[in-house]
Amino acid sequence: MNSGISLSMIVKNEGKHLSDCLNSVKNIVDEIVIVDTGSSDNTIEIAKSFNANIFQFEWAADFSAARNFSLSKCTGNWILYLDADERLDENSAEIIKSLIRTNDNIGYYCTIVSYDSEVQRSNSIKYVRFFRNNPAARFIGKVHEQITPSLEKLNYKFIHSDLVIHHIGYDISKEGKKRKALRNLELLKKDFDTSPNDYILFQIGQSNFILENFSEAEKNFTQLIKSDKLNKQFKAESYSYLAQISFNNFNNKDAENFISSAIRLNDSQPFYHLLLSKIYLRNSSLKEAINELNKSIECVKGLSIFSSDNLQQVNVSLQEILYYGLQLSYQINDLKLKQKMFEELSAVNENKFVELIKLIESDSAKAFNDVSHYIKTINNLNISLLIFILSKNNNKSFVLDFLTELYGRFRNNVDVIKQYALVQGYFNKISEAIDILEDNYSVIKSDPSALLYLAMFFLKSNQNENALNIFNAIEKDFSQYYEIVQKVKAIKERLKRSIEV
Image (cartoon, rainbow, N blue to C red; front, side, top):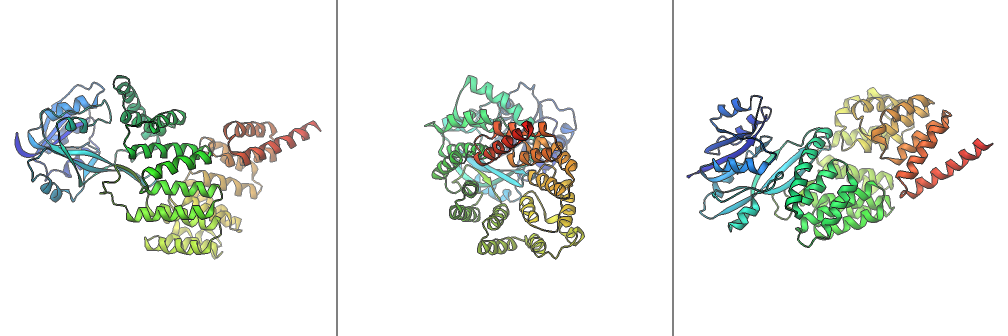
């Protein structure tokens, strides 16, 4: 065993990512060990260009088996393990030099930041990724494999480090995430059948949540919150997932109880306070909604990804919270809060979007060309806020032109779809409104108000049977959303009487 650092990797068809990964470590590690499990692209050629030690391993649907084979080929005193879709942060060279100035058996927690440009959020999780080599160290788990349990048995000390690893593997489409989650779920279930534990069950719950198997995810996380062994931060996350499921089902009481439990376990997560604010807003508890908004802002301003307090966290950007805060100010007509949000957004270089909002509000924009140069300031974080403000604008021709542009860019946003259809209806283009909503039914089916709009357009076009089918779907799928269900029942009763007449 030499005194240097070994990079340990397993790969398959990673030609797209491998160069960037190896470039991030080439001046830091002394040895690159790559175990290939059957690549058919240029992965091997790229590895050779970095003078890697390359080994072949027959894939057996077990990530730990491949990881352990890679470990067995490493000769350095220290092991850094990465995936090809990860990059070591550029500031890591000096950090690593300080970490290896010890003869102790240590495992260093590193922060892995996973990016998701689709929702413009990142997630951080802390794992031991850098540790002193030991022939007895072994990974466990067919997927989401872990080295920590093995190092614990070997009496390693665990220390939080400032090492950051950037993970781009989940910066993919929703469908791509689902494919990964489905693959992981199959392996996780096999692991759980042979060695049931809370960590695996948590990963199963996350996979079911990504796959939108919400009833199964709810069962998983309900079981986890009853566990006495689960780390309190992962228990808080379990409560958070249950809160999200309840919130999406318009079960506000349960959503509030779950997220409040999460906050009691871990009050430094900005996302928890943001979600609770949205729940309070839905319940018309306006003072509490503002209070939780401010707590979320305080958390995100004071939070460091290097903090050891959170092993796992959703990194909600300050911009996302401020956009929500601005929309909250409009909904409750709080001018003081509105001004504060404008100032906060300008302070984080969102002044161009603020200018756009003020331009729309002032009615200075008479045609879409007057604001077209601001279009790049609109993104997934502020699009719903913009739609809300456009809905209040009386220049419907301007709004229609603006929404036509936005509909082309944000086809998966339910607020854009709803408002675009409503404006078409304003101009009595009922068939166009119906087409918009029907063409995007997979998006709007989880939004009862959007379904209600579709049913009303069906009624206007004398498609009473289609309207009735939508009303029945709303009653069935959103029985807990009392106000809309009562409205649907009243309309159905009037429709029934008109048919009888």
